[in-house]
Image (cartoon, rainbow, N blue to C red; front, top):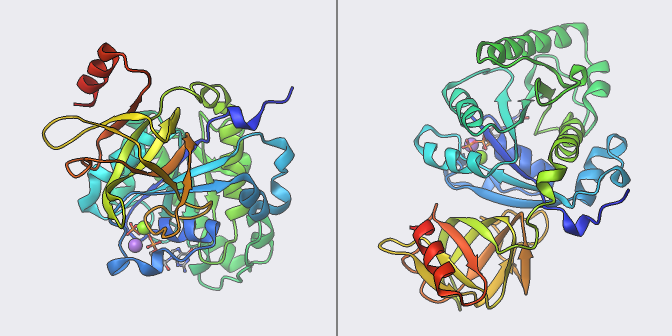
Length: 345
Ligand code: GTP
Ligand code: NA
Ligand code: MG
């Protein structure tokens, strides 16, 4: 049985973890960008969003992913800040997620915001995998650029392997201390009841094929039903940032997590004092693999379907707030509009 990929919702993958454990660098490696290098103080200060198409994923995953096995359109990655002062943004990112990647520096192990991230994932019931990052910093490591982790492990000395294993077992122990049964991902059968640990390096790319394979498998196996609902319904999203854009005034950077938004749609968005009702003047979509935070060449489109990052240009958005809900209202049913306004408030 084949399913039209166009009818499936793109899964949202949130990337969470302690400050500097490598979340943005991991995404940079996947999308072929250098967002991390442009960050003030090397600290992520906003939630980001990047649509990574299936073609990029299968290219990076090489032999591990056969794109004909998947009918998902790709993955929408949400980057979150790890610095302790941004806990609101971490919760917001976690709440958007269908699945998550918890990034942990293998040498540093569990840190306060690792624990905080786990608590968010527990609270929201979000399935996740652990990216045991920075394996290349293991003393004596022999880097295997972009390779699957098994190949990389075969190229390591006994000494480097056992150093890495010590760190990985400590991580597995910490996860079990948090109430999760975890193991190396290749030993995990059921990713819903067990947490898979993927050793990798965002810097050298080794192990990233494995991470992408696990994420695609998780989305495909457990999320297909959820992914196929509501794809054509009225759009629902969350405002990431309110930004002035030349020629448009205040615009909204939004993660659309359900439904469709079209040019000309009436939208209701949370404002400082009251809900704002306005009409979409333009929809500006980041290019594939572009981080919405950093994108400068948005493409103007007539409609956007979930999940996606999109910049919405519309009149009267000056009082809109980051974190506020956005909803499309179809038709001019006054009662429906009032109901949505109450909900958005
Ligand atoms: P916040 O968003 O501020 O929480 O940080 P982050 O988790 O996004 O980490 P970031 O990508 O900013 O990386 C922090 C530092 O670790 C940077 O100097 C990266 O170059 C480095 N780094 C990240 N991943 C790796 C890795 O796999 N190996 C090595 N050697 N360094 C890495
Ligand atoms: Na950082
Ligand atoms: Mg970051």
